[in-house]
Image (tube, rainbow, N blue to C red; front, side, top):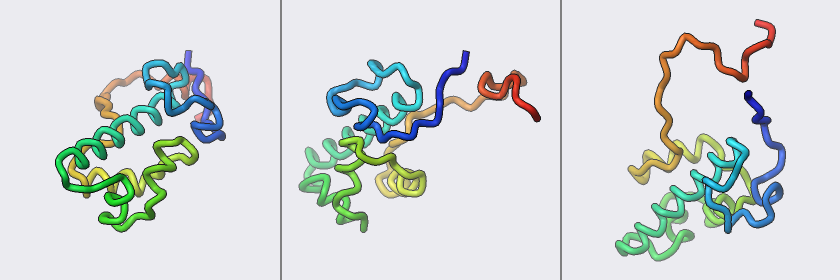
Length: 118
């Protein structure tokens, strides 16, 4: 049964130990995706630092023309990432940030829409 709700709380407000949680340890599917975004972004930043392409996550933000606080706020979970910036990052970094999902050609109505008026 579909039970996800559109969360109103930032991840760190919903999960005080946000930075310590692995995505797999989060039951709520919406927050789990946010944790996967956090993990993917963190991995890309660490890789770029290790390769010597940037000195820090703040340096990466500056080189991309973003406020230095953008990545730290996302990673800490104090704000939700916005789609415009996520899309920009995937294009600019040439790396996936959003968790991949297989496209579905299913004729089955999504569980979240069952029983709703059309």
